[in-house]
Image (cartoon, rainbow, N blue to C red; front, side):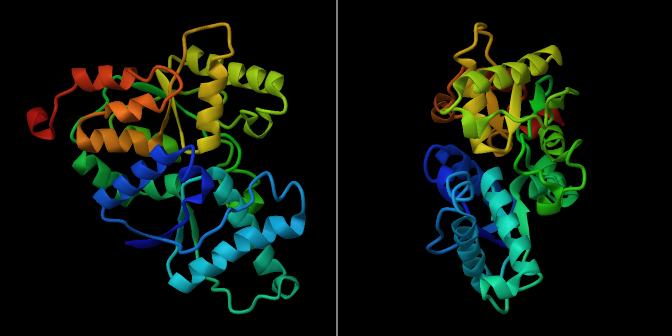
Length: 287
């Protein structure tokens, strides 16, 4: 399988570790990624909230570059995914307004969790897992942008999604049933209104703790940074680490959790090490 790859700004900046894990996992699963040459910022938040024309032209340019490669487009960042899907919808509905002809109808924009939750991919993950995370309970947290609005994203089960749960189960961990998996974490307001961010993140983390979660898993770099970072402002020091789905898969496939990866977390992420240390260190030992 070959896919065009749109990393977006976060994965080349504050979420470099997410980018590494996406590329590592895809490589291990036989998925070839071709980074879109000369891609630009999708304009998430800053552009589309300021000017509609700019907010659409930025992601449209990326789609036209992807179309030249001729492959479906893999997008790890939830905000980038939402903006590319919004541009695609507008382009297909109003091609004359955007003065663009020949855009391929069969070009698909694929979010990374949707790809990794496909049955064939899940089976590959299970076959290659070196260490299972048995006993690790995780709250799957989707946030807003990879799901809503469904008229843009095309997601059917936007209130009760299951892609992250499929990823968590593929490495032997247990997804918990909880109430806040699609609630907003206020990522776009975290600097302007930290009071709102603290309240919403506090509600999310409390809900995950009530469900018995040892940590959380997400596919949104903004959510990951905001939910971990704003926990530091809360009264409780009983923090929950927020892992990327690809981060979990990478550790399960490699059989270890690198210290440099653990260091990028803003709260203690040693729970993954604890589970790994309890688990057999290879699939052969479990046979």
